[in-house]
Image 1 (cartoon, rainbow, N blue to C red):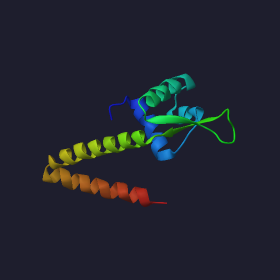
Image 2: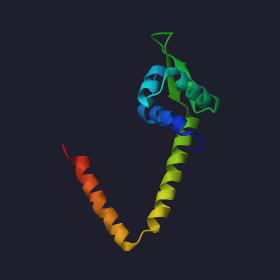
Image 3: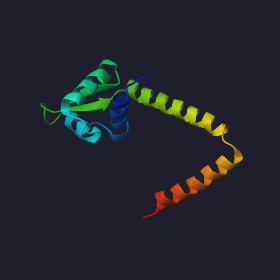
Image 4: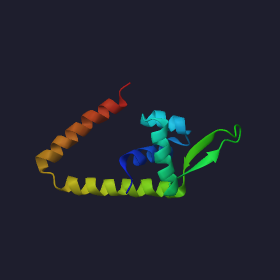
Length: 113
């Protein structure tokens, strides 16, 4: 995506998890508030996020992903999918069978109670 890992992760939280306060985002990302402030500032300068005042509490700001941030996440996902697809074409028949078996096991875990 052209972003440092921490910024990519924070943007992902906002895209898939919705608006967060700075302290919520810092807690999710397991960083201190000053570190998160620097990340948010950089993401805001890049146009990927914006700060929105809370309609009920003017002291509180929510951080939300912008349409540009959503597009950046989508482009990143598309590139990762492309790299994965290209990598899969290089597998041998035995490796594809092993991968299919592993996927069956992981799928079973995903649907267990």
